[in-house]
Image 1 (cartoon, rainbow, N blue to C red):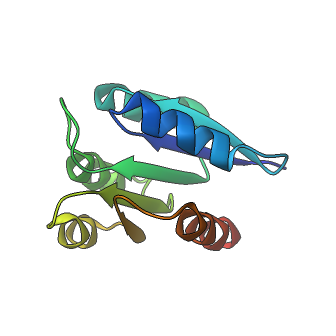
Image 2 (cartoon, rainbow, N blue to C red; image 1 turned 135 degrees about the horizontal axis):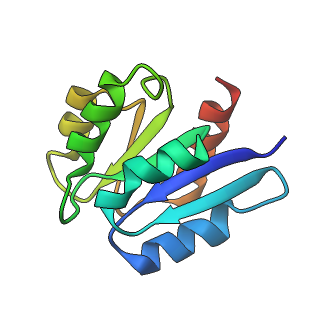
Length: 120
């Protein structure tokens, strides 16, 4: 069974690169460009892993993750947060992310985290 990965970032280029990098015979990748649409997408897709940017318009990633962690149904989705902010790692930790990637990052680092989360 393929792992379902949802990626939310307000940068379409980053989404496209991550989709190309992560899509495989073992993974289905779903892209969400607008943070305000993410919760509905999670309800519909029921992902195995969420990759979430912190700094986005409308809703910040840390606020979204706090909402997910408060939800009975979605609190256990493994979440990798990413950000170029100097406070990104701290915010990711405070809101309950399972892992953090500082932008820019190496795709190999992302693959390692996705594989680790996929085994959980």
